[in-house]
Image 1: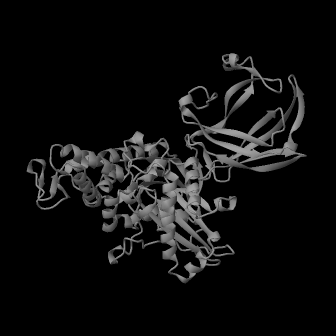
Image 2 (image 1 turned 45 degrees about the vertical axis):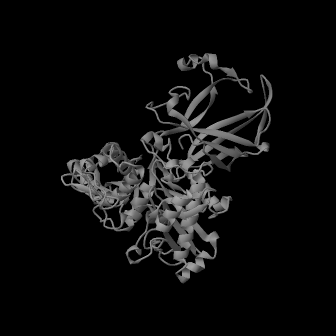
Image 3 (image 1 turned 90 degrees about the horizontal axis):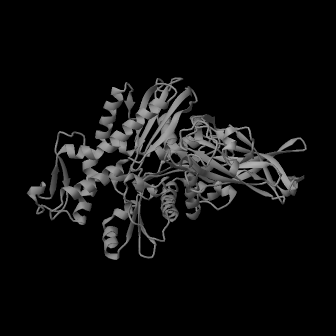
Length: 587
């Protein structure tokens, strides 16, 4: 539904866009009324953020307090209210923060992140569910202030949810997020309930946000290549698109999206380590003082830092807090600007490298970089990336709109407009299984000791890899990839299972999954029902067996992978829906 077009549905619906960020989260909403042009709005009122100066807030902290029994005691801005922070300390509550990073593929620990401790019996899905419950409750209170909002909330079956996630996430993270939505009570655990949850990468959400907020015609000229750099609290997502059509905007990915664990939270982490080292031997090097300094650094020093040539300040304690040898006078720690610059440097260097990589892999020259996200509000980061982009000959702009809400609002514009029609396969995907042994092929002869006689009497080799789509392939949303398969068994099984593998290595045509094993992993399992009556009965060298020829049909071009099974019977094609089960390896 292009922008400006009336909603063509027959019933009124509510769609919520939810962006759970590493440090801050937001909710946007759109009430779809038949015949009316949709409007995307943000929830701008949350408990704990009352007051005139907070009326336009679209973000709340991504934090929860749990008591010793695992009960939620305070969430979001309410967790920072003095009453709750005092009670948390007195009663020993546990703070869950940065929990989003626990879903990151391969884990955050490899990237130097120290995550806050959470209760042993609270899984990441439980924490997500608790936080979603709170966000949904806040959204309902805000939306119900409108008469039409109260009406649409009466039927929760007509509420859809669009969740944004980092570019580097896939099927396993989407599975866990959907399970959290179910545990939060937002949808039932049924096929219809599952269908009400949609996913979009933060890169695509940011692109749609920029389009909706008035990208100029020169940016959206046909054949232009636009790069989106979404710098958030935990991740920095990079996406590059080629414009195919400027009216009713249509774009395709120009290079595979990237995701870095170099958001603003990691600047805070480096600040903590720096302060601990700097104040070693000082009476103000204790955890309580360091925590207070890091809190001030995050809310004041970091977001205002812009000039390494000027002294920066961190306030803590009271006016009696003085330690001149360590640079502390009357509760103020003075630091050379170059020290603050060093805290930003790893993130700046990583983002610059990723921009170069995106530009190198793109199918054309980058005409514009758009910098969005909460971390983009940092004047120092903006300045460094502006200078870098200028040196690369690429204009860089920060949209005038409040880009910290790009993911939440952009997720809804994605749901309504879907301007991205094709995406690039990040890895090579295929199936693993057995193939017939052919003695005159050299690589088959090398594997002769692994050959075996199957139930059909044929000599076969295991561990063969059959590619379905190669890395770098541009895949449209409705493009079907088919792979012919056969299933032989001693009995007519009604259910089949197909293993989809991903390959991340350098080989252009990988052939065996037991070679270059560190780059092969299970992406997902595809389960489908064929029906026992559809099997053909045969007799082989080892006796009677049953066989079925079928095709696996995979759609890789969507933000959420889909699959089904196809087979021929009586000259007609039959299809069966398939269930994808992600094992968490790399999905």
